[in-house]
Image (cartoon, rainbow, N blue to C red; front, side, top):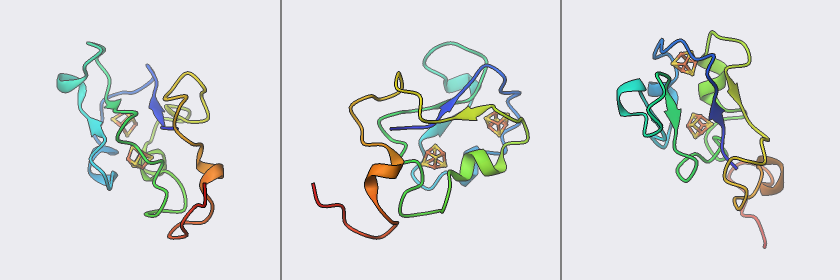
Length: 92
Ligand code: SF4
Ligand code: SF4
C-alpha cells in the first residue's frame, strides 16, 4: 500500500524532504496534472522500516490531506499492518 495525497494539498512543501524513499514529487512534477503534490504508489513504503508512522503525514499541516488504507491505491502492495514491525523481515 501507499499513502495518497488528496486534493486538499496546499502545495506547502513540508512533506517532500521527509520522505526516506523520495516517493513524493511537487505539483510541477505531478503526473496526474493536478496542482497538488503527488506520491508515487510504487515507491512509497508507508515509512515501514524508517518511521513509526508515515513521515509525510506527520509533517503535513493540512488535516486529512495525506491518507492511507485506501484500497484504490496500489491494491497489490501489502498494507502497512501486514508487514510486521519495522526492521523485522516479513515471512511471506
Ligand atoms: S509514507 Fe513515508 S515513504 Fe510514503 S510517501 Fe510518505 S514519507 Fe514517503
Ligand atoms: S505537506 Fe501536505 S499540504 Fe504540504 S505539500 Fe505535502 S501533502 Fe501538500
